[in-house]
Amino acid sequence: MFKRVLVANRGEIAVRIIRALREMGIESVAVYSNPDQDALHTILADYAFCLDGNRVQETYTNMDKIINIAKISGADAIHPGYGFLSERPNFAKAVEDAGITFIGPNSDIIRLMGDKIEARKVMLSLGVPLVKGSETAISSYEEAALIADKIGYPVLIKAAAGGGGMGMKIASSPNELEQALETVKNTAISLYADESVFLEKYLIKPRHIEVQVMGDKHGNYVHLGERECSIQRRHMKIVEETPCLALSPEIREEMCKTAVSIAKAVGYNSVGTVEFIYEDNEFYFLEMNTRIQVEHTITEAVTSVDLVKEQISIAACNPLSVKQEDIKFNGHAIECRIYAEDPIKSFTPSPGKITDYIAPGGPGIRLDSGVRAGYTVSTYYDSMLSKLIAIGKDRDESIDRMKRGLKEFYIEGIKTNIPMLIAIMKDSDFKESNISTKFLEEHNKIIEECSSERKTIFIAVENSN
Ligand code: MV4
Image (cartoon, rainbow, N blue to C red; front, side):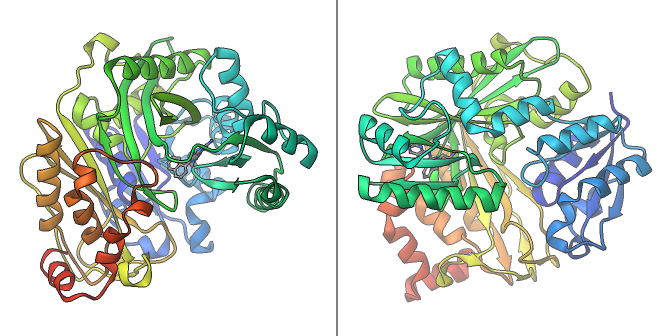
C-alpha cells in the first residue's frame, strides 16, 4: 500500500480523498492556490504545498509543478479527483514516467475513451447498442448530409474530443447542418486542437443513466448498479439518484452486464462509469468516464462499498475487495449538488465570503463539502460547494430526508441554489420520477419561482437557505 499520496485537486473531492486516505492509514499531501490557502482541503491534509506563481485559474492543472511537488514531498501516488488533470492521458503518462502511481486507469484507456469516435468503434465491435450515426470522423459536409438523410433529422454533431455536453450542436433540418458542422468544428479546434467530429441521431427526450464499474489489475470486474442523472441544467447535473425507477429488472441487468463487458474488453483497471442515454425502453452507449465521478456518493450509500478507497487500493495492485455476488443494493439514495449561484441573476456564480454556516445532519444524511464558515468563494473555480446526500429505506423516505436536510442547510453571505433544489424535491413529476434531461426546461415554474422576487419565495429563502 502507498505511504503518502498527493491529492491534485481542491474542494469537496479533495476533502473526500483525504478522508479515504486517512482511513487507510496513508498520509495526504494537498496542493493549493493562493485563494485556497484556508480551504478545507488545505487544512485537513497532513501536508500542504502552495502552488502559487501561476495564474490561479491554471494552478491545479500545472502538471510539471504537481509532479515536482509529489517528488519533493515523497508521495508515491497522485490522486487526480475529477475535472482538472483527471482525464488527461498525458498527465497519467507523465506521472507513471516519473515513477509515481497515477490513481486511475492506465493512460491508454484514458486516451481511448477520450476519443469519442474511437470509443464508438470499440462499442460497435463489441455489439454494444449505439445511437445511429457515423462510424468514423466526418470528412466533409456532403458526407454529413448523406448520413443525416439516411438516419433522419434531428441530428447531433459532436466533437470527438468533447464530452459532458461540450462541443455539441443540434441540426433540426438539412438547412441547419452546414452551420452546425462548422460551429462544432471551430469549437473543437479552439477547445481541443482537434477538428474531428461525428454525427448521431438526436434523441429528443432521453434519460441519462450511468453504470458504476470497477476492474482491478488481476482481471476482476464488477458493476455497482446504475445512477439516474437526468436532472441537469446547461449540462450541469443537479440531482442524481439510485436506483433509477424507470428501469425494469431485466433492462437494469442488461445495462449493467453491458457496462461490465465494456470494462472487461478494454482491461479497465480502476473505478469508472459507463454513460448511457435511455429512451423508449432502449439504452445506448454515450461515453465512458475514467475518473471518480461527483455522484459516486449515492452508489456508496446503497452498496456500502467505499469507491475512493477501492480506487486507491486497486492502484496499489490489490484485488477488488468484493465479488459481484457480495454486492447488495439497499434502499434509495439521492444527491443534490449545492452551487453558489444567484437565482435572480439567472443562476450566475455568486462569489463572496461565507459568514455563517450550519451543516445538516441526522439520520440518513451525508454531506460532502469543500467549504466552511469564514471561507471566501471565488469565481476562479467551479461553483459547486457541496453535495447533500439523503439515504432512505425507499425513495419516499430519501426525498423526505433530502427536503429536511436542504431546509436545515444554512449558508449565509452568498446565494445558493438550495431554494431550487427544495422546489425540485416538492415537484409532483419528480415525485413520480416522471423525469428526463428536459425536466427543468419543461418545469420553468421551478426556476421562475426561485428567481422571482415574490414575497412568499423570499420568506422561504430567508428561512430555509
Ligand atoms: C446525446 C443526446 C441526445 N442524443 N446524444 C450530453 C452530454 C454528453 N455526454 C452527451 N450528451 C447528450 N448526447 C444523442 N445522440 C443528449 C445529450 C444530453 C444529455 C446527456 C446526458 C445528460 C444530460 C444531457 C443534457 C442534454 C443533452
